[in-house]
Length: 322
Image 1 (spheres, rainbow, N blue to C red):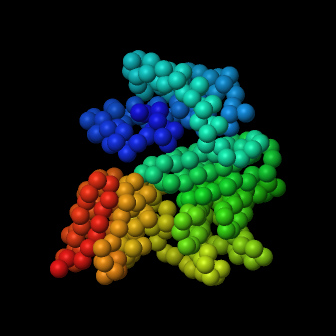
Image 2: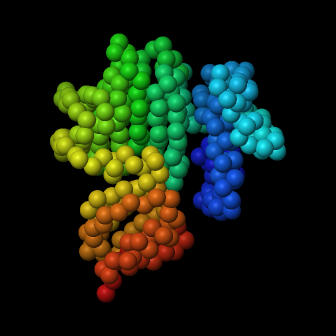
């Protein structure tokens, strides 16, 4: 189940079983994090034609023995857990061929990493830039990334922390816009099933291009591109939390309607949400959700005297309280 979880293949029931196991004791969550580190070190999700088993094993051995700092696994987890970690690595190596081949849609030397609904995935790119993928997102990049063009393709939402290379700009392409970076931190939300693409700058400088039009974005500014109208709206924001806190496990919303929160909640908890009437869609909420279960979250909205809900299987229906 853990392997299927890491590869994005776990079913909803398996995710629930793992969550129940994690809640039994803190050591289980610590073990899962350690195994996730090893999974990523092993090179899972890489393109099958360019996957280097020996290199992945060498990196793994170096990681658990010494890296010029303190040893990672030997001092952090007991011997039995280390054996489990090694076993996972041995299982992961052959699976990396299957999942890498399955998940990489582009021909040539490319890597695609997908994040399942209800999950988040942290990635370190070959140039040491860091990316955090939100639920239901996919990132593709060239395996010659470190020496060639630094260009990635995003479908979904991601938080980028980019290493500065003045002579080699970093570019993020979505289905609608291109974002060019010299060295910065920013959030880009570009889900293909949503009507807008939103770029929020934390530090540095961005150039966003759509067609023949380019816009420079400064820190604490947000650019919203409307796919239907083709219009862009650049605004200054004082509160970055609703745009970026998701990467730290917090869902923050300020005076947003249930309709505006629909897709966020669906991706965050891997559920389906529907509205029984138009009025309930417009009810607005402000809050911060952190590691709550879906039942706790839904009950929060149900505290409003105007909002009620029903839960059946994986579907949540909101309706106006009579």
